[in-house]
Structures are given as C-alpha cells and as structure tokens.
Length: 204
Image (cartoon, rainbow, N blue to C red):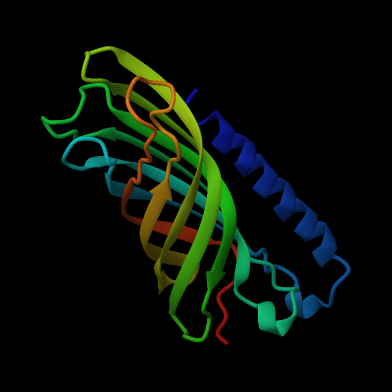
C-alpha cells in the first residue's frame, strides 16, 4: 500500500483532535466549539525530477493549529500530507513512473488578514517511487525525504477555504543501490485544492 503511512498520520491527527475536544471542556466557553483542525484535498502538478515533463496526482492534508498557545506563537501548527503522482506522464518518462509521499511537520500561517493567509511549512516523511532504468529493469525504492513549501489560503465561504501550494522535496542518495553514482532527486510542484476548517469563522 503506497499510502499506508499516511493513514497512520491521519489517525494521529484525529487522536490529537479528540484530545483537544476533551481539553475544551475545561476551558472558558468562549473558546469552545473551535476545533483547530482543517482537512483538504487537491490536484497536484509536479516535476518528478525524472526525465522531462510533469505528472499529475492527488494530495490530501490535515492541519492542526491550536488556539491555546501563547499569542506570539499563534499561527503555528502541525500538518500531515499524502500525495500520489501517477497520472499524465510525458512520453520521455518511464511508463510505470510513480511517486508517493506521506509526511508531516510544522506549518506557520500569518493570520493578520481577514480572508487571506500566507503560510510556510517544513515536512519530513517517506517517499516511494516506481521507475524503469536505462536497462529497462523496473524497480521500486523508498527514502526518508524532507520538504519545504509555502503558499496561500483564501476563505471563500464560512468554513471553506481554497489553497494554492508550492513544495520542493529532497530525496537523498537515491541511486546508491544502483550502478549509477549516488545522487539526489528534487521533485517540485504545485497543488490547488480546497479544505474545510472545523474552527468556526472568526476574524482577528
């Protein structure tokens, strides 16, 4: 299962959300019903850094942004993300080329605007890829990867937001188990999607 690690991360996010609900029962009523969880899905277009061209795929994410942190830390949160790039390969790319990622890390949103939030993020996780080498031998490989990214979110209606996201990934020592010299893959691309924020609408 390519995305099995992601579902473990999602379960962890839901556990955190449940714990927060329990905590909310003992805080003042003004902060109740503000579950700081957002879940979203989008379409991704990435350069897989393999041959020439781009690939399409789907992305899922969940953000947990607590409200009870000190004022100077407002906007910091945790994100888990999964992406499956498996569609619309270019003719120059292997017919079986596929890249899956499941990762998690820190996200920070600047919440100084009513309906607009720029953000940055740093994630770590696991990447899996299927590929075909120059000898036409098909292979599969996995790596611990890191990702840097950012973008912006726009509120379109109450709890519904749209997100435009850019991400740059680092897959280290990708070729170390082959006859080729050790190298690094750097897939990068964009995701456009929508999310539902369970936190009730409010303005700062």
